[in-house]
Image (cartoon, rainbow, N blue to C red; front, side, top):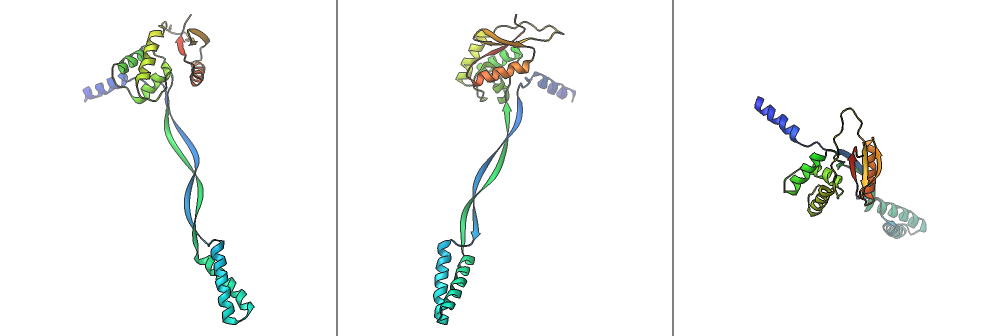
Length: 210
């Protein structure tokens, strides 16, 4: 039992932590459906009224009887008729969506890239985190475009100095070898990187670059 527990603990420690998060996203849309309703259309009611009027006049020989017959005939036609109509209702659908984020552990990122480039496996969420970090479309599938982007990232990624204990790290955003903004707030830097990515601009985050 002790051996099994130790192996499980080692497996958990060895597994890379996910940078992103799972979110529940919902949307509401109108969906058509068919419903059968009582009551005929105008043609059915008019036809019933005419037939009722003819029968009423024939039975009584008077126009008053024709009028009563028309009313009764129209009412019967309306009551006995059904029709199918198209209606709409709002339906809310929700699904779990993984939102990738930046991997700040440079060595862990490098090991994941090397493993994936050599045909190894990673979880789909981890692949999306890696793709997001190196600036390629994050679909969770490690294809040729991901390999090319990963190789370019490994070739150009500078080695960040070690972070001193007790000091707040300074995060810098680099675009085309130029640092455009620096901050100790990693979340704000990450938001800027994501906005640049959506605009088609690749960037990388560095730590404590002088």
